[in-house]
Amino acid sequence: MTTKLSQADPTMKHRIADATVTVLGADGQPLADTEVTVEQTRHAFSFGNIGFDFIPLANNETEERPLFFGSASLARLPELADQWLELFNTATLPFYWAPFETERGKPDTARLRKTAEWFIERGVTVKGHPLFWHTLAPEWLNELPLDEVEKIQRERVRREVGDFTDLIHIWDAINETVILPVFDKDDNALTKLAKQRGRIEMIKLAFGEARATKPDLFLLINDFDLSPDYEAVIEEVLAAGIKIDAIGLQTHMHQGYRGEDAILAIIDRFARFGLPIHMTESTLLSGHIMPREIEDLNDYIIPDWPSTPEGEERQADEINRHYRSLVSHPAVQAINYWGLTDDGAWLGAPVGFVRKDGSLKPSYEVLRGLIKGEWWLSPVTLRTSAEGTVPVSGFLGDYRVTAGDSSAAFALETAGETKAEARLA
Image (tube, rainbow, N blue to C red):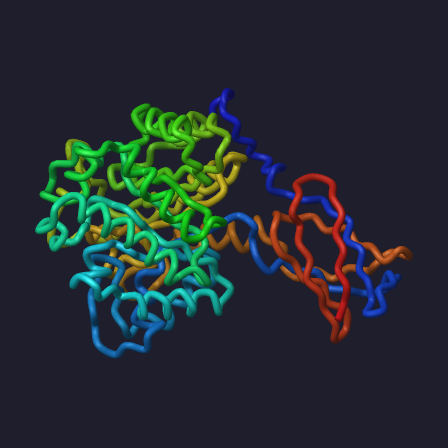
């Protein structure tokens, strides 16, 4: 159940268009009294997941080359790709600096470009993550004076944005800024730089260099700390004149589902800034829950973390509730889940919708029932009126109308009563 004070609307009316679509023939005249088929082809809402697993597939690699996480076995990748593409329309690719540029001056650009191209060829929007993050900063930075560290970080932002300017238009500009100046888990040059120059200067660096390279980028600030401290950072950022396109909220729920009320209350707090909310890193487990006393999720290291029948039923229920509640909130523009499969998942946790053996968990079917079922318009046959119109009600997104051998695309872009036009070719 949602709180009465929440902006959420379970009717989803803010997501649904009731459109009168005028179907035009190739001559531009209304196609009257004609049988047509209308179907949805894409959601406007961003249903995303990480695409880390598919770097080897996109690059036709035949040898295992494990990542820090997100490295499913090569043999399962073709089937896993089909399972991924059935549900998601946005892929997050990893630009963690240390593994991306293990040796200074030799970034992994070519592999990531091929992966981005692979997704785009399949109609998927690609997001880069992240341009600035103190964790996984390369060790070779530690040998350099801070002025040089800042110079190289600026160059790094410009390089990645520039090298992917034709492929990636959405980036997490900076990650986890609340903890950035006080981070003490390891000795990294970017935290030292933030301590000396200040948090806001680091945020200004990331956003400024990215926009200077490509002014029309869509840039996020992203954090796991959803306390008032993050709100205070955002207030400072906006007061400093730094343009944020969306606020990223991480919800790795390895310690249990927080529930609709708690999540919606968090979203309501951040929605006050009037910016879109992206749920950038979402997870729910299908195995045992991580002990509550663990403060840093990365500290929980166990040899095996299996998915269980009981856990899978719980996960399916929680995925249903979580996605429904998020989509019900008008401020939420994107949900990005953090892993499709348990094979190679972050921390070895059973977060995926697919088991290690490639079989589907109940949560996959639940999510498919929402994204490609309840919230999706499958092909429907209609007859145009004397004025060449048909009524189409569906979630905002892209659609196609077909009459005989001709078809045309149209979009439902505005919720409520609206009009659209499709000219057959």
